[in-house]
Image (cartoon, rainbow over all chains, first blue to last red):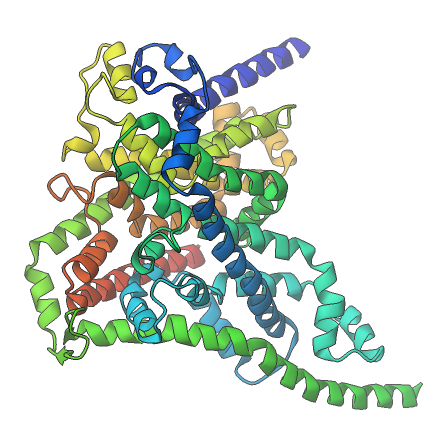
Length: 278
Length: 303
């Protein structure tokens, strides 16, 4: 029995290590190339040494920061994404709470609407949305990146599902203590709902950090350029040196990596729970 | 006791009224925003789809009946975009789902260090699609001297492949990369699903003499049925929206082989400035996506 177990362990660790190395090899190559001098990147592609940085230096990173204002683009993305998230957490949580715990006219209609609009493809409405932004004078402004994406049916639904499980007795106790419904929400419900807020936070962060098509339409020039647009522009701008390109890709992944280190647990819970509740 | 109960009813009635007021305050911001930035543009898409509307002339929007749709029907590029989108979806969904399930099974056991492997399989998700698309464009370079994957093929004694430069392989190259990037997400859902299958079921199967493979087909797969359906549904919807990869990697080429529906909407609306026409494409795209997701929901409910 123990012999079989050892064998199982060997197969498990050996197999997984092999698969994992193959799986992440493109990312290893990206980081290794970002550290190499330009002449080394495409040398010896056919040997494993291509995954090791030879003559490693941070010169490519310095070149990226010299050629483009990377800090600004990262800052731009962080700014608009975090504002979307904060507004999303407020606007959608109170709506989800109303749908979970209050009785009012039109509740079922709203709920049906929220559920059926969850799979709505935003790509189908981007043309009139662009026109709407132009009419509002919002092209190339923070508003066009933020305001249309604050209300989210998916977030409303997630919040509602979470708040449904909060026992009514707790809310009744708060109301007997003299809390109005609004105060009850902010003083009693919100403080015990950290999990769902953290989950929406990280899901939102991943979704909007990756925004590409919409910023491509509404952002012109460098002032509001997002990080995704910046690396795409950098990829196509001369002189085309692959070392700095790989460095720019690596830099742009860092903020998301940091988010994951802190909020990974909630992200996993978030996508897992959506899958199981379906 | 009775008085207290009565007081409670009055209290409840007061609560009901203030509750209703609070409810309207609570739903107000979300409802206004959804109306302004989801419902209104949706209705506008339908409206513009029946107009002749050049983006440079917003003062001259002319109703043109079904003209856009009739033109679409004859538009070869539109049908190519439909074909490419369906081709991508039909191939990437099973490929990515099977890959994700295989990865989930690889790390489903409770052993030390599993989280490292999980992080590795998930890592392409942590980098954005734009990053991954640029990285793979470089790796897919058609010369074995500057393309990592072609160097590998030559090393294995195979012919170098055109990848993104060849209309026959460009979409397949995007499919392969997309599945690699996206599988980690589905893997997480599968992992949660696997935890939902009770160990007793596996024990029962092994008492009945089922080996590993048999218990996969008789216990694991049936236990994951709902999760698989859900994963397939979200992957299909995601696949239908393909845009970033062809935009970054191929600009829809070579020879239209990677031009998708969303790419075509973008191109017609913003590059060729046929706003009305692009809205007609968008309306059809919307109908396809919604009917696919409703159809799949129905199948799931029917079981």
